[in-house]
Image (cartoon, one colour):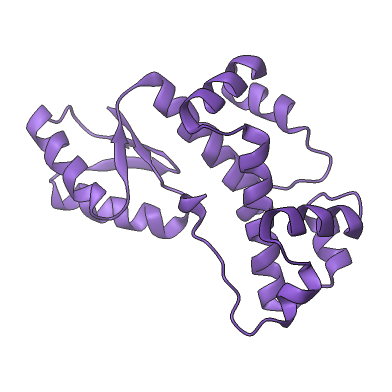
Length: 186
């Protein structure tokens, strides 16, 4: 049986969900971001208890198709940006439509309806969080960061960064206490 879980965005999330599944007596066959294939067909009571335990960790079972699609969109974007799946030359709308085998217009309208913002804004917010992370590491120049994240120029990166944070990337780098947000909070 396949179950879908909201807010699974990293390998630590997979470990936490695996632990909860095992505590509930469920055997995960495979675990991917946002979805788990488990052996057997658990009872409604087991799933309800699992959902409550997951909620304490910031996760949640998704039981409707539209919610699963939204979670898949988010996981694809997080994968593109934070897990090194690559951004160079990616057309986001085409990429999402191909990955999900759904019309991008439908995906865009659904995302906006349920999330209250556009896919593009979510994508930009994720990119800016990655920029913050890379700035904190202080290993790459802004030019290298812009290139790695698919920006056409440092000026474009700086413009988007300032719109999102109110700060320039250079000023942000100079701050002693960088304020990053959790991926799942975006």
